[in-house]
Image (cartoon, rainbow, N blue to C red):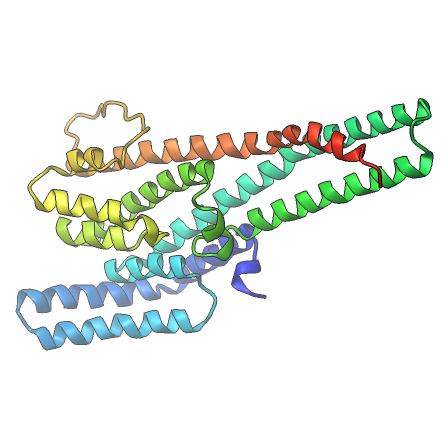
Length: 312
């Protein structure tokens, strides 16, 4: 089965299994912690040949992951960040949680879409049977119109399921719809959330702020949005504080950040607080559209009724 045809739930299970396997065997984390420690030590000692060898060790494993054919391009970027920071488990957890959330939204849309479909079809049926009772249509004509309406609604559901089922960063479906206003609104804040998670992971991995800002921008799910996050890097390099740069570059637009009430709070605490606030805003938008998009089917009702009255 192709990776793009797997449901979000199946991909969540894939990364759950990888996480469990890594925790059981102590696999990549230990290897890459050693590689990263050696790389930083070589840099401090100014031994470029050793740095290059250690980087090649990471590249070999990443190429191995690519060659399995099981990972999407954006997933590989997250895994590459995990390898670069010596914390592949964090990458597994992030990918698992992302797909678990997507599956929940998918299930919610499926649940919400049932009543609008029944109402629209029921309204069409009521109009047609009223016309039958009024002897303006024959029974055969009514049945044909009901069949066509049912086929149209079934096709609409099938297309919707395909979009939801195959919605992956970097997929053809994603690239086709990512600039739609409401889709773009959700994707915009989703990229900000992943960017901040990248940044936290890179800093926790021992990278400098400058390195972390650059790698965080380059490893977001959709490179289409990278320019904004590279602007944060350039702004901080110009001497602006990170928190100010995030606000100035629009990363925190529409995000309600409450005051951090914690005695002795550190810069890391503040960064995590901002990340949590962005995540809450992301969830709010995601659930809003998950619950309200299916209701848009009601807008089809007048059109469907008019179409059902056309002579076949």
